[in-house]
Image 1 (cartoon, rainbow, N blue to C red):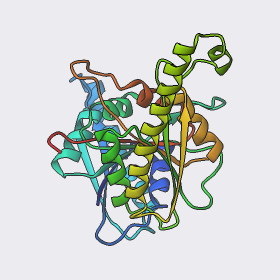
Image 2 (cartoon, rainbow, N blue to C red):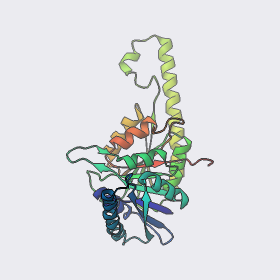
Image 3 (cartoon, rainbow, N blue to C red):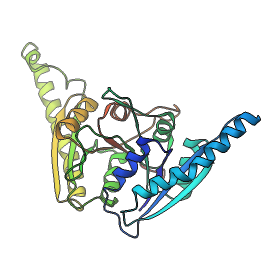
Image 4 (cartoon, one colour):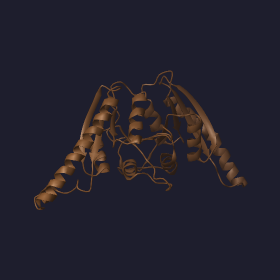
Length: 296
């Protein structure tokens, strides 16, 4: 597989490199470490000097990331480019037919939430390639990797499952498949069911049965696919708000990665589906935003 690790020399980018070092790479895998010297939209002498200073720092930034990745078996190459970081990262990933873009997320000390920087956010939203946003977790990185795979049975979700089975993850990686059944009736408290007439109760019971059957079918499909690669696969079906249940389960299980398919809203630039957006913004662990590429 081909990985593109985007680094700006920050501690968050270096955390992303350390996270990658936990993978079980082979000599057939490749990690391209990319540092983009950001375009400065001024041509005066002052800004020219700043740009030269930034360029002089680039080799050290790339060297540090390469040192972190030195223990892995994959071929590691370093690249320096100039341009707008988000566009350059996406262009390089597409041109190299990269399988996965890896980027760090910025944290704020004292706050539990991690915030996506502007470049990371832009890449996650607009890239046709899957993106792994690495967040350092509060529960450490010991033991087997834990991946919470959230699926709704859609094309992007299936593509994300395929990606997981192809990634060079350790053999002892644990995977938990989660589907959250939601409908307009899902959040109706059971105590209120007793207060409605028999016809409505029958309709509610039928809807919930259909939801459960649909969720079971979706989870079964994902479980069978993932079991071809992973021996430790669990399943859980919840009912309620998908983003809330996914985040709750990831924290309870202490997941290292939440993996889910993402879909942008056509014609509306800069938007993600609500579940993907909330998960990326509020997860206390890394998030893999899978994609179903056009034409696939």
